[in-house]
Length: 213
Image 1 (cartoon, rainbow, N blue to C red):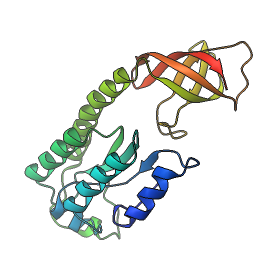
Image 2 (tube, one colour):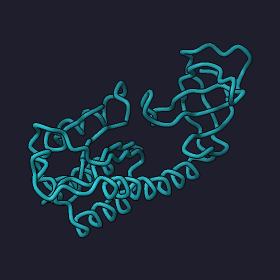
Image 3 (cartoon, rainbow, N blue to C red):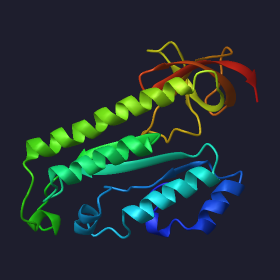
Image 4 (cartoon, rainbow, N blue to C red):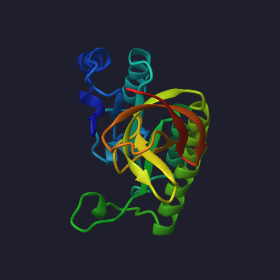
């Protein structure tokens, strides 16, 4: 489930995700920020109360759900206090997947015409700070995966890593991490296999095939 609008992610939709085995327990919510004043300047629907309540319901009602989000740092007028609010929000929520981008001023856009444009170097530093926070969270999540057995879609042999590479339900193609694993000889891309996670390599997981599906 990608690009879900927080204000349109209803309880009914949450129940369908939770109960339907054909739906991967992964939801992408591009929240952009946590501070009400910044969300208002972004013209985003909803507020921090709605966001916090939605995240709580998702985690309570969909066991093992993976939540991905994106943030923007350095929107015009973003104060130090508003940025610190975002930092604390990212720490507290501990998103399984998160990307943060520095605001980019574009001509002929409402934000591009706003006063109080944040200096470009500061925007980048703020985005880097968010990603540093997230790197620590991601490392903790990867370590916590050790010992789990995950269903992995094999995408082929990775010559550089000298093993197979694939994705679990936690990994969107071309965006998220991979699972690198050893397995049976001549394992074909497109096969689902069970992989016991034995370690982590940065954001990525490592493991070994334990049986065939």
